[in-house]
Image (cartoon, rainbow, N blue to C red; front, side):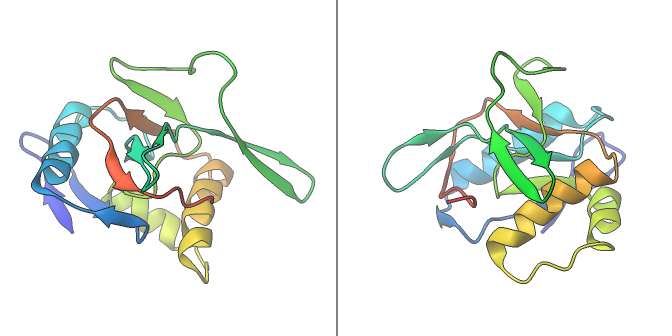
Length: 151
């Protein structure tokens, strides 16, 4: 879905994760309000959200990607988040449900070749890192109902 945020100069694309297990009007409001919150933030790849899985476990998906040779790890930041802004934290990844500026997503998709849902999100994270695109933001908003794409 493409959303034009009020008073913003960008078209926004909302990717709803296939691991989302419930979507309500409140979730739509969270996404909309978050777009308005970061509309003037120029240094971001994607916008994501905290999530709650079916088990009731809250997840904070702002993680760091660590590559060593051919191995890749997603890890939490040990202390704080570099470049945190107001109620948002910067990281190399965010939730599966995420919002992109249309031109940013198009730039990433030119290089994407994932063959499954989970690898698609990992590939978007890696491409943003490899192409030196700005970091993802995860904002402290009410959580979305979604399973983690890494599990």
